[in-house]
Image (cartoon, rainbow, N blue to C red; front, side, top):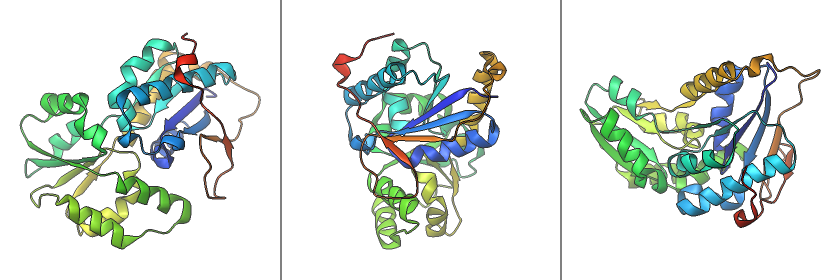
Length: 265
């Protein structure tokens, strides 16, 4: 399978989703786009995020990248802007939403937590998910922007400021009755081992990576992208809207245009 899949996030967190998709669909072509000039999206307004995603679509079309499917690997962007962005492109788009439903199904204490960015926690879409899929359990909401920065640091430097992590988790005061914690930001699985250690492995962590990979595979089959072949698979291309102070990845710097200049499909 040589479908071209672009995975998008405000930063490096979406690579946690990318890894699941690559494992499920190893023969596809991949691009990864991070809008790190506005990192973190959890601190941005809904209209700003919609505008940036509009500019992303314009970038894809103007550069003839031939993207077959886009994965918005950002809970904040998915819960606040996905429906609007789908209106401006014919490219299939898969979003990421917090794993509220599976968490409500596996909890034994009937008390789950959602750890996400402030924007995701405040999103009406998130509250609809809770109402529809977790009405029989208690759901406590916790928001953090600091954890996004810590995840970025760990990814690029392989070093984690454990004191800062513990300080932030302590500040959140996650209820001791919670036995399942939903990682509602794609950055947070980067910290999963450290978060598990903080809770002495007493809390189960859930994210949406496997489910998203399954959804992407299903859509590729539905659109017959599995029959699209190229002579040679290209290496994974990384794009970023701001400089990345790391030599870990070969990243192409791009500038997204003002969304008011976007030409709708």
